[in-house]
Image 1 (cartoon, rainbow, N blue to C red):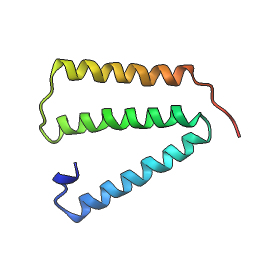
Image 2 (cartoon, rainbow, N blue to C red):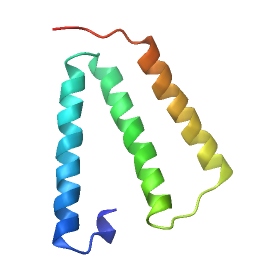
Image 3 (spheres, rainbow, N blue to C red):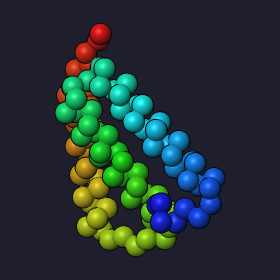
Amino acid sequence: MLKDADSVMMWILIFILIVASFLLLIKAYKVIPVGIAYAVFVGIGTVGTYIVSITFLGETTSKQQVAFLVLLLIGIIGLKLTTKEERE
């Protein structure tokens, strides 16, 4: 995505989104275990990047890639459903 950022505004937007994602990760660390929070963070980032690259950057995809991304999403949902939140 950064290789396609051709304006200062795009760089600023990307920077803001990265900072926001890390702030949300820090917030998640306060209520769920670190390992689960990080796994979900990375999984959502992977799926989100994949969707953006197909939708806006014209990258190609295959049935196998979509199948494995669905498995990743199922894993993320499973982690969330089986993790108890810890209150401060």
